[in-house]
Length: 248
Image (cartoon, rainbow, N blue to C red; front, side, top):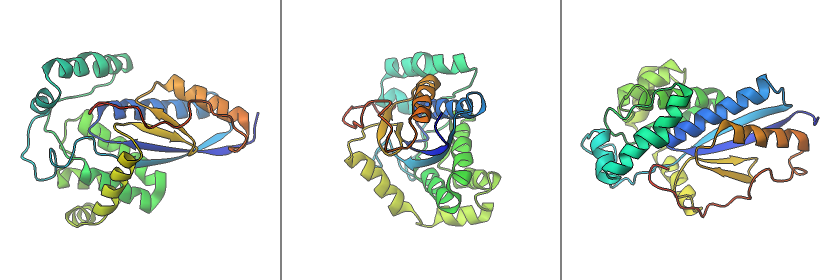
């Protein structure tokens, strides 16, 4: 078995995307299994980067609030929305005994992405990962509005990014607006039309919310390979040309 090395994982996602939550859950489950059960000689360095599936001219922080069901029925169509709820996402949630809610209002994710980026700048994955987990839970399980400044500030304080009032002040400012917007545009310029996209060791790309088994197979191969430079690709080379729908 190869000596221990760090695997860099960069995840590009959007918090309003159910498939991003699926990919997030499956990836973390695979990491836990690889370390706790398989005892693979790997450590993991995680970074989450922003993407906004819904254009700013359709959904932004000033857009009048609308229910998620009304929004999805309008932009996806009733049949596609029913399939998303009951089959694509619903089946996965039932198998994992998790709840994914489509109640509540549709939220712009810009403010949440700004806080996620701030968390990474302050404490790398130690602060960013707990925030990502909390924001997915708030939106997709608890039906909270993650564009609401008070909701975000409470989460920021709970996961120890910063005190509530400091988070409010941050969110009322323009700090990191340009950086987050530029990162979203950079991903789109690279050909990414949907998320999640997971980049392993800056070399290989996984598109979509893949199962934990896919990640475990990759981690096993990387553990057997030794150094990054010596590792053959355990998956297809990076290809961002594949088109994906608005909700993956």
